[in-house]
Amino acid sequence: MRLAEGGRGVAIITQSSSIAISMTMQKRSLPIAFLMAAGNQAQSGLSEIALGLIEDDRVTTFGLHIKAFDAVHGFERLAARARELRKPIIAMKVDCSEQSRQATLSHTASLAGSDVASGAFLKGFVIAPVESTPAFIEALKLLHVTGPPPGPRFSSVSCSGGEASVMADGAEGRLVHFPRLTDEHRTSVKSTLGPLIAVAKPLNYHTFIWNNELALTETFTAMVSGGLDLNMMVLEFSRPDRCSNTTYWPIIRAFEAALKTNKDQSAIVSSLPENMPEEYIPGIIERRIAPLKGISEAMQAAEAGAFIGAAWSEPRAEPIDSAAAGRLGGDRLVLEEAEAKEMLLKAGAGAEGRARRQGGRGSDRITGLGIPVALKALGVVHKSEIGAVRLNLCDAESVRAGAHNLLALGTGLYVERMMRDGIAELIVGLVPNPMFGTVMTLGTGGVLVELFGDTVTLMLPATRDDIAAALRGVKLCPLLEGYRGRPKADVPAVI
Image (cartoon, rainbow, N blue to C red):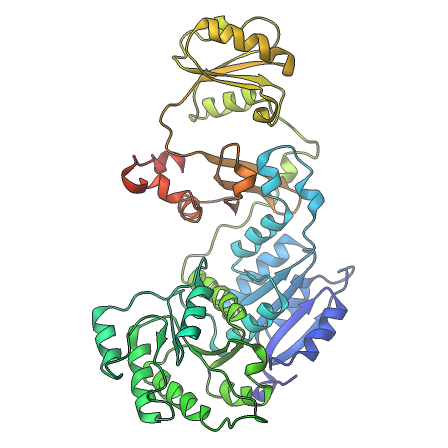
């Protein structure tokens, strides 16, 4: 374990002494200033400890390994102070309870359990969650060396088409991306390379200029001049018992010179952790370049950093209303569909329906609704699984026949006008969380909601902009925008 010059480095606070010990054994050259284990937080919690360390000038970045949160307001104060001091926070949340996801009956509850709620909670405070210990270490290293990238637009250079492809694949499905080169940028890069090289992002500059420090500097300078948020270079050091590593330093010096010209943030990435030996890393860090081990881990680290950088450029979010869950009371309250839709109707949303609690054939309840109608059995959560729904009923006789079959399945009947030519189905659900307040789940709805799992989670209160951004984050979004000539949805009405 190495400390940065002057003892400056990251502070790691974990709820596991074993993980704390493992962190001290890492060979990824993460500079650690403080490492503390909080155990079960019986006396001091994670946010309390972090607040005690955050004013120390030796601490550049925080890493929190979280099993359970000690206090919502403690994290709120910590996040606010971290933002003021520009000290980013990375979190690895574990032990998400399966029981909490099974504690309610609705689709929404199964999707908005403690794991997604805690993720939304952390992001609401601009604390970037990561999924693994290696990504945790690499994210801390990136933020210690360069600080958070201001956004998700990246460049990458390597001497291999294979490495360029792996970098491109590593960004797939992530916030971070390699934008297309503008014509001007492409021409600038092309002018520094031979005629046989195709200029693209990520850039494969080949080995024609290998060990030519001046030519490398010209190419790298042209590549990083695009005003991007983070510039990455893939570099694999050879094993010293098999090859000489002296040829790699001209490449690093050329990259450093290009970055100084543009004053850009940067990282050197190895595809395999062992291909960046520990003894070379201090020389890379001294150049203010982040040495990242593993392409997947590097992409997770860069994504976490870009999330923080972009969020810090936006106004601070509204405080989470953690008291909302308490106001709902401790007892479970399950509303019938008829009751829930009556509440929505009074609030100005939803279509009118009719409920019949017991007996009868239901045909007297369709007056004024319009046709076709849908008929459902009340008192059933997952209606389609037991055949408790009848659709496209266009006359009184079909309603009577449906009612005869459905009455025995539930506590009553509910009939409502069916929508035709729907553009998309959304699920919107609210679940009280004992710590975070009310959690809202939003995403692709319908009977396949659990199968697709295409949802996002928001902490409340949420603004219109928050909800609009969340909608853009679900795969259903192109349908709402009029996919391939289809009609567009009334997104403002949805919001």
